[in-house]
Image 1: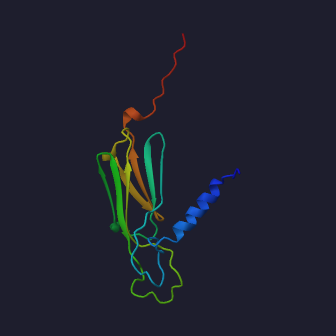
Image 2: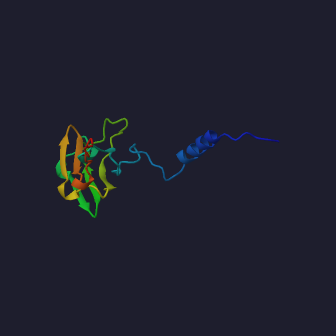
Length: 145
């Protein structure tokens, strides 16, 4: 007898199994009031002049964020502090995550991390890393004979 294999059913069965695992814990409920580490969403893109890294950090005070570069590795670390930690009364559920975070990014060799700059606007941290002069595109004129 030949049985048709459906990979999507296998995925659904595996995901259902993972939902029942004891190591999976909710972000917050009435049995778990611990601070949970989280990871901010990040976009990385470039143009002719710079490489950009945008991290979504709404509600975070920039004094709680640290940016460092070592050996062409950019690291962003910080903490989102719980605003109402003293009282959990009135919450039905809580989706906002609090706690520490850390993200590392390997920088390409064609950027100059010593010239990196950072800015923060409307909850988005933007780190700008300029490209080295030799990596920038150069227009070569064509001479007509």
